[in-house]
Length: 297
Length: 133
Image 1 (tube, chains in turn orange, brown):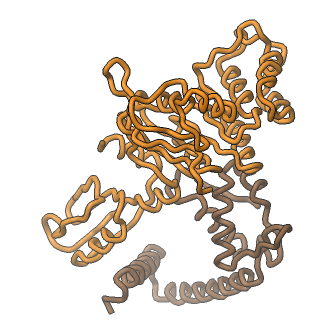
Image 2 (cartoon, rainbow over the protein chains, first blue to last red):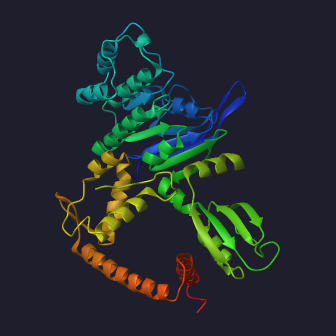
Image 3 (tube, rainbow over the protein chains, first blue to last red):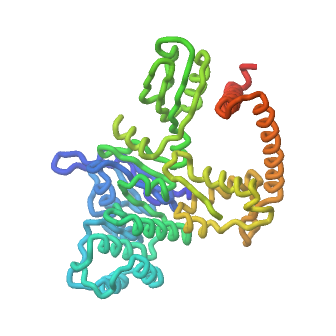
């Protein structure tokens, strides 16, 4: 899991003078399950469209499978090898579920009939129903079925569990995890559901106002971020100039609470050096990291 | 294996998985030579990232807790099982210490605070590289 299957450097994109992407970087390791996070309007959908070659960047470049995204012929090759699902996609209104599957299947030589059948059954999709008669949730699940049966080495999913009930969500997550485990399919998905990302992603990237603010392995982030509670002897402010990486210091009497985002070891040493110090450490959730990063940028 | 992982807890999932497997060995739920589920199977059952399972298994192998037999799977090592015997010995030490402290008339809270303070002291001595000694 070391080669970057998606790589972007300094992506800039504006729409009618309004910047949507402001120097965005991205590194998605092959074989990873990668959570792409950000507030609404942060630039997630623009980034995905750029990667899929549906938009061209104003500046900077992106590569998928080592091919240049935004380059006309490379984009065709890229799209051929990606299983793509997004809410915006139009589905043919005169087709039934089974017909759409048969139609889509014809474009992709590596199509997996066994997976399509499995998902049809697991997602409880009615094969003979016409597309407009499908509920929103069923339409999402159909989009996922089409992307996941593709036989692609990379899935790009824009909010795949949006609008699904908890049981359906768990089913989708289980199938994504199964795909990853079976043949190392890379799964790149954007989501607002931090708990789902925490459950299955091994890498995350948080973007805010068109730029990357946090990126890396989820395990490393959880080891790097900590809440500290320090109780020390003496009155007044803690007699220390904290190293870089301390956020939100809050002192009440002789207790100091803070969120550490990096340089944890150095800060712990400083904390322990305080007179009569006792130091407690608390783990930090992805939600706290997310809120912290979009607040402070 | 009955495992309970909390992906929102802030503790990396691979560490939780390692802890729970070690705990299962300590309590005897897993014995030396028992086979662990395959990476794919465990990932699917728990709906978790297979790479995370790989990391946990790899660390456990590095620590000698499990052995990976080529083509066959991962098994609880003899070393791990004997580690469990150490744990059972430690348990009886704690039991007799608690009995003695109870005979001094200490409350449960007082005993807990004593242990926590000692552990914190022990931890801070380690961080400072033994400077306090």
